[in-house]
Image 1 (spheres, rainbow, N blue to C red):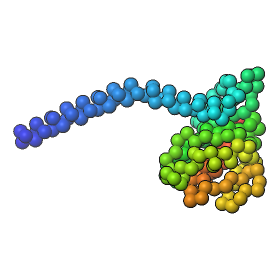
Image 2: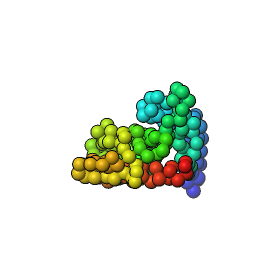
Image 3: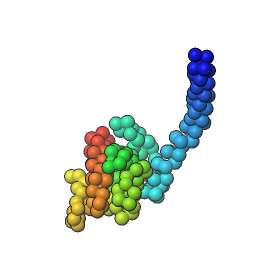
Image 4: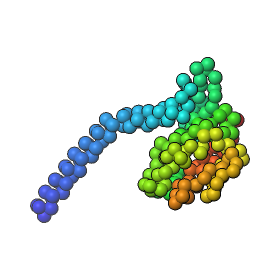
Length: 182
């Protein structure tokens, strides 16, 4: 009995110390993690829209949307986060559209845990490049064959689910934006 109480006391002290240390370090790193997320978003906007000198953030359905302004302080488009379930986990993208939200002018994958060598190809320029100048009217269509229209994207061979997920996420988010921004 005496030995059991001793073991319980030692385990309790170890657990309390571990919890205190985890809480302390979580508090220290929280601000840095938040800042890294903001920096990743700003970097993606800078890459997708180098002409943007300023942006204004607002929220649509709880997700951030950025109005982009050029050097003449003209609003030339929107950048927004689009995220949803992929094959292996969440896919999070930064997307740039024109003012009418009728065309995508660029897309960057911010976070993804898709299968290396297959689904991870959604991050590559060969796939992402298809979204530059892509019409979203009536909506984006995914094809396994060659594309022939301005609203079509060719799927990645061997990663159809990841490709389909990107298109579904974009179509859903763009529709949501169209309804709430106009």
